[in-house]
Length: 181
Image (cartoon, rainbow, N blue to C red; front, side, top):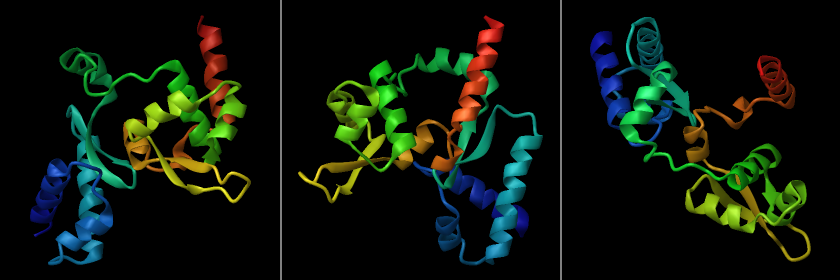
């Protein structure tokens, strides 16, 4: 029966429009115990890792989704001509990084950290649903508070905001790139 459960879970992940979390899978597969479901998911993920396939199942934004393997990226980009993921401007990337690493954060704080007005970039990120408004700060003027979204996690292939590289990791990568130049 486990093989059937793995097939069911694989189908659910395949048709889901967003990362499918464990709780949702458990709510759908009520005929099976939680441990059977968890074991089937683990076996399914491992089977995609161990097989020579062009796709894999990854965890992103707290759920499971199908993803292409990074080594096939150049051909996938050719096929899609980069239409699915609109490129973010340098300013938008800076603003997004500021929100990601300093959240919850206000527009004034983002602008101060970047040293320039970030309102246009922030508006763009809100439209792309990579950033969301989560409330108001209890300070004069009651400015809006911004955070990253689950779409941000999915866009960058992260399971959790804690998966962002640390400052030390970033510096190490940059140092390695300088050596290669």
